[in-house]
Image (cartoon, rainbow, N blue to C red; front, side, top):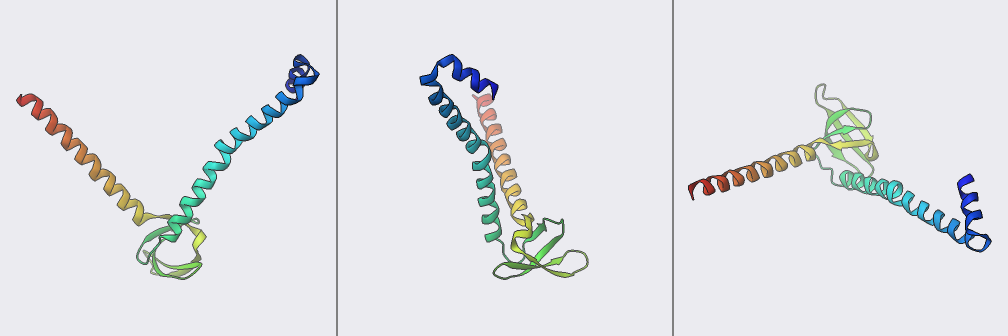
Length: 130
């Protein structure tokens, strides 16, 4: 607060209010881009993940329970735990991660990395042959 007062005093009575408003606008913009926008992006991604759930997917709930989806209703899912085969119904928002989708994404990433590595090795071999 003291910095704002000294900034207003040094600029004079006419320009002090405008610079203070400008600082608040900049502060709000920074707050939006570093706090609000990333949170909205995470919420949107989580909602897309929950909407893409299908029967047979292996999931983890926010409570740490891991199981396979047996049935999907409008706002809830029924999972079967992997060891005891106990069926439990959860609200969809209780799903933390879709382990099946993450494993598939990891496999695709590993395959892409292997293909790039193979391509680089072919390029090195072609350079040696020349």
